[in-house]
Length: 424
Length: 189
Ligand code: SF4
Ligand code: SF4
Ligand code: SF4
Ligand code: SF4
Ligand code: SF4
Image 1 (cartoon, rainbow over the protein chains, first blue to last red):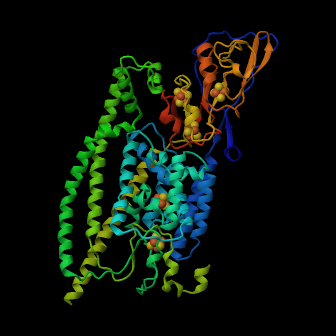
Image 2: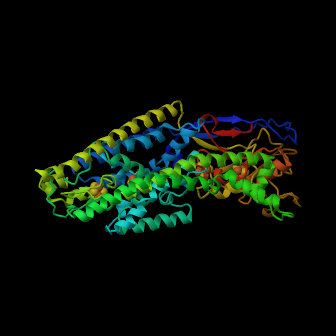
Image 3: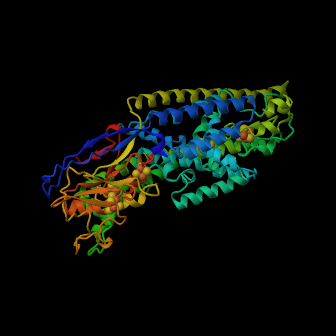
């Protein structure tokens, strides 16, 4: 694929000094010429421009669809899955760009490509202006789940709430691993990349297919219970300038839209008349407010204490373990590849210990912050769960809403605009 | 009247909180955006991954850990470094008995190396990139017994430029690093 589409620029390289010279350079007498070998580097500029153009175009299209209550979303999803998914093979993606951004913040030598920056920022800007229109159909992973979705099976509220914490934990852990330069968690465990690339890690392929099977019966399991970027976007869509609304007219409380939402983001009217319960609720809310700093401190402490364990995600810390274990053996029979490589580059345990200690120290600092954030996420979830708001009509929870627009066509108020308008 | 107030006050508060949230979110978008834009200023196009042949110890993981079905890592031959030896450490298995091209004498498991007689006693070696799987066996042979003219590189026209190279994660020699366009290959010439 790449060979066909990329323009190539020949020969960009550094030449290295030569180390070994066991045999002298031959003296050819027959006029032998060295073959000319050139190694091509693909020039991806064109692709990058095309990618970002596609992103903007699809975002604008999705915004238009949401605002005008039209439904070309399925086409947007299809284009996204085909282009970003199968043609571009799922890279670069906004979800993964979180890690590049985190890395760019801590590592001065890492220069983030501009297209990655665009993939990180544009969906956020759009989410802040119009809601999660990126998730609606521009994100190939969301679009793929959307396309296979048939039924909107409901998950019970408490279970959904607990599972809904996972994206936040995933987000915090992803950033922690990225800023400590340990690993790119999202890329490593991307369940859909194997599907887009038509092959790859068997476990991940199975995981991806499993997720797709689940998405047939309940909307977007990955988006709701795993995606760290969706969590980030929900922060902005919750307070966005324009909100996704089921209808521009007045809701007549017909309940028709309620079950159309694949991510269960539509909240039914709620009277909140039960004074007794309300007082209880307020009390509980206050309790949780007090609990927040406690949870944050607890989280920070726990993560700080597990810094040693967490730092095993870093290759050099794992190497340190292996070398220590290896050197503790009296008569080692086999030497692990890693340890062999370590000795071959003349590494010493002392040097490695210094490296390892500095990594663990980093984990301790960043881990403390991460733990505090985790505590905060938990406290906010509890607060949200206990706040009982009065609602007169069916309303969209804009943090959870992925702007897919499915509820629009169920609302009879929208239908009154004129059938021809909807069916366009 | 009293009832009315009870109904409107929480709504007002909610409105106010929402406005605060909008302001915070908007502010952070602008702040993060401009910081990042400053950070990525001067970045030129894509990031590539490349093997530093001076560090690589031919552990064999380049063959097995690339995300592609057949690794993007290939053996590259620096003719100007090569000794054109008859008894090539990359071509023949070590302590080879007969110098003939029977398969059991060949180092390369995929038959990717061919050689051509140039003049006595020199042979030119060529790698067939389509057959090579980046196992590095020939490289090991050549660096141990020869001039080290065979070495592994990530072929940038095959590599899909993963956000994080899977092989870099497991490379035992820390030989794979991010490089920029100008240093996309580290060639021995
Ligand atoms: S929640 Fe995540 S995976 Fe789902 S559509 Fe949004 S960004 Fe994509
Ligand atoms: S647009 Fe409607 S159906 Fe779609 S996620 Fe939002 S509330 Fe649910
Ligand atoms: S993984 Fe590293 S050491 Fe092993 S063959 Fe590849 S570059 Fe060389
Ligand atoms: S021995 Fe391995 S690295 Fe060398 S040419 Fe054959 S397949 Fe490629
Ligand atoms: S970046 Fe990806 S495709 Fe390229 S060599 Fe590494 S694992 Fe293979």
